[in-house]
Length: 64
Image (cartoon, rainbow, N blue to C red; front, side, top):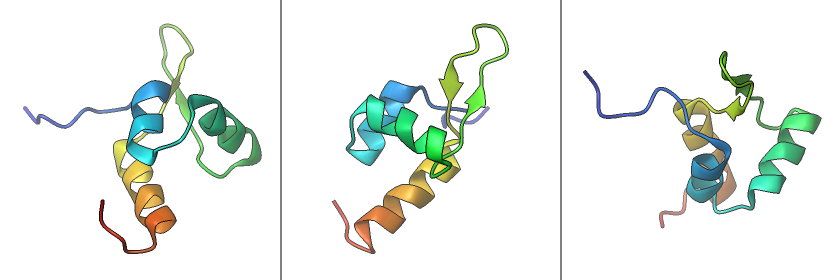
């Protein structure tokens, strides 16, 4: 089994991207970073691969 999570919560994705969780909610509403919904509680969840791709595009090749 992999150590990588299958999905990230709003809080976790916001931390990876260095933004406020409310920013992620706005990005979802405008289509910048689409979310999926958890089947049990309908919370927003994020694909770690998509979050990492957005992080790289925001940084523009810079490393942290």
